[in-house]
Length: 316
Image (cartoon, rainbow, N blue to C red; front, side, top):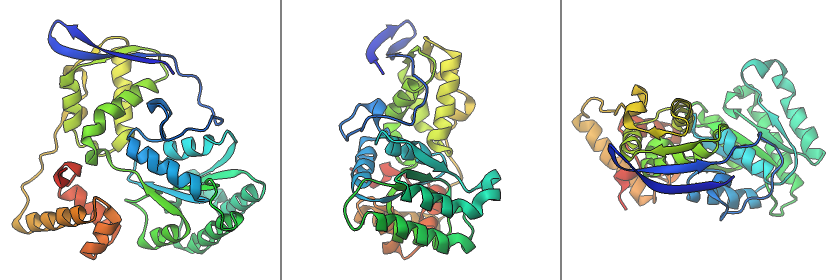
């Protein structure tokens, strides 16, 4: 994909950023390997540190779980990870309308792995408790195929942390190397980069310029739907202003609304302070912070949203 960017001057804006985007070919499952230093358009996640962690873990762990809130790009990252080998992979989802065949999902995974194929198992949080033991056995079988040798990921799971039960998370954490994708609200400073990546993956070849005011408005938004919601807005903007300047006035109301919320009570402020202190002590690692606080990770994620705690609160 060819990308050229330059600052341009327009009449009613101090400056804007113009991006030249080449047409994007159809989605393929075969691709060349992508290293940590790959171009932004080739990254498995827009934020380089997250991409690098994915590359590192995927290169040495036979079983990888990509976890995060809904819309954080788990399936996208998993597909990029698996397709980097240049080989086809099985893409399975035992949730929703596919529950009719769910009892056979374990056999399908085992057969694919034994045949040398890689597997993506999405939405494992949808598995009922009665199937957790089967999941545990599948993870163990995938790990045994590596015979204790560091090997690229053969089985990749996606897990929605806002839905998964503590019991399911325990099974996953014991049988897989877990990489957690951040919510957009915790990486607001990276929103311009994410928008840039989303623009360049758009199927319509276009030349787009985004005003600083529009980017600032998007950085103030909470984005509860995460990258999925942000992608929908970007698609709307490109359709509205193909090849033109995107101004703040072009953004849908949902993309400019700030989350003010009610004022926190004294107890909530104290709780917020304790969580921020724990996150700082843990170097931003949420799982470690949850252990410091003596609460579950799911409880911590909920409190981060309710108490409006993001990466900016942790300081440099």
